[in-house]
Amino acid sequence: MTTAEKYVTAAYLVLLGAVLVYLVIIALKVARLEEEVSDLIRLARERRGG
Amino acid sequence: MSTSLRNSTLALATAGLLVGGIALALFWAPEDADQGFSQKIFYVHVPIALTAYACFGFGAWKALRLLWTAEARYDLESYTAIHMGVIFGLLTLVTGSIWAKISWGHWWTWGERQLVLFLILFLFYSAYFMLRYSIEPGPRRERNSAVYALFGVALIPVSFLAVRIAGTILHPTIFTHEGANLPGKMLLAFCICLAGVLALAATLYRVELAGKRVDASLRELRELLA
Figure 1 (tube, one colour):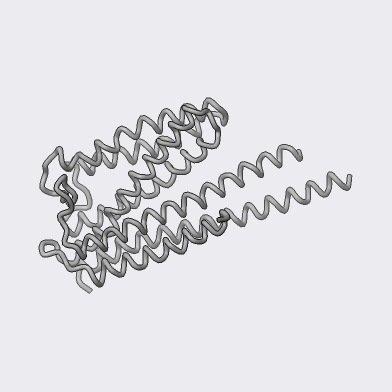
Figure 2 (cartoon, one colour):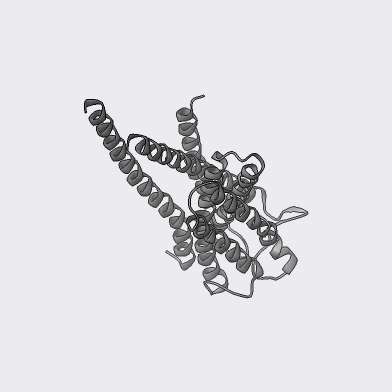
């Protein structure tokens, strides 16, 4: 691999890496939202029951 | 068309455009006679930079709508667009530095006005978050954030035109008032890459905005149930 090829690969990997990092952040956020929704459902059930 | 179907279509179009654009840029577009293979960075760096400008401009447009109509939903839309702009701005600086290193032998040069002005634009919008989170949520925060976002938009044409005004030789000028200084194959690959990166920004914007709206709704629901 030439030096130019290494730099070009690095630049394209920056974009790919950013998309992957964003995907991980979104996955974590969805997991957190899921947990919050479960909490609120439990809270609503408790209120209805109590 | 439902929102879910529209988001899926946009995500699929993004993937297609990005994969197609990168394949064309790397394997189909001819190598630059002057810079050789390293010029291929152009196909990611310039679309990412133009997308950052578009995101900041879109954020400022939404800020203007907020000040004009006082509708709170524009605040979240403006904030999300600026958030995207800062992400693409950071990517512009990183890919630009990689290209600078291989082309000029330096990661960064303070002598180039376009680079410095882009850095100022990036730092200006990075400071937007500090301003935003230093004020309690509510109409005052919405208004102040909108005014700040609108001030920043003035830096976009200055940053974009800086290389033309400066007339320096380091940072190349591809698009002039006479058109694009690119052969047809390079221009086509560039346009597809640009469409792909813009579509990526649009997809991320929609996902981020939906997430922030769900967050806000859940917060409201929690307050109602408390």
